[in-house]
Length: 192
Image (tube, one colour):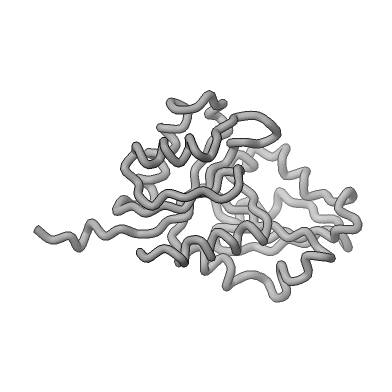
């Protein structure tokens, strides 16, 4: 029997809506155990904001569906907020490699975030943003929007206005440091 179709691949899982502002608590050790019970291997988490690296022979869609169904059953969550985005290591590498020139390279001057889109593309969402000239900047990417705020004027930023848009439920945000760290962790694994 061929195992060609059952190769283990490393995936980065971004879970939207857990451990935010003291709500939808899912302790990382319990989350890890939950995912291991689902049959995923080499599960690791990074900080408590819904970042997971795991290995599976399932497709990204299958992984996403399994996790989205398991979370409300395992934790006390408002499942309206929960969304799961599953990326391969190559997809996350492309997000980092295709960043706008200079993006994330001046952390002392700018807050740089990657807004990961779940089931929508950047062309659909870009019009919903209204960046303030001289404070905010946004760039479309493949499955993401790159967002940068001038740290000294971040209180004047308009980027938080996106939270009022219905599309906000289809986004999960990671700062640049977290995004690059997740790739480092994923690259330390041995598969896919």
